[in-house]
Amino acid sequence: MGWPLFDEHLRSFEDWDFELRLIAACEVLICPARMARIRRFDDGTRTDRAVPGQLFTHEQAMTGAARERYILRRVLARSEWSEEERAALTATLCNVEAQLATQPIRA
Image (cartoon, rainbow, N blue to C red; front, side, top):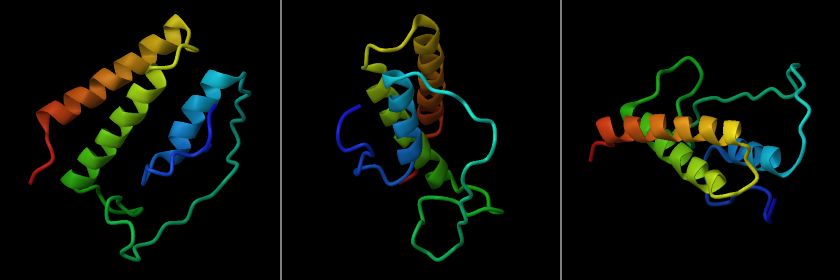
């Protein structure tokens, strides 16, 4: 999977990035029960993310999409994916890239 396990350059989506690399590296058993609870509150430290109960700003949504694109491109570069998995990841990447192309981050 590589070291470090979590990409320290990502400000969000670290868990999603780790999950995709984990799925590519080994067989995963899915447990439908909630295993963790996250509590977020507006303390002003995460201005690039919406807090629960608030809508994302345009900039937050586009920043998140750019981070998704980065992760998807990175995991698609790996060869461990089946044809079906690669097709699903590629379709997701196409959707994210279309979103970024039609609604760029405002300066």
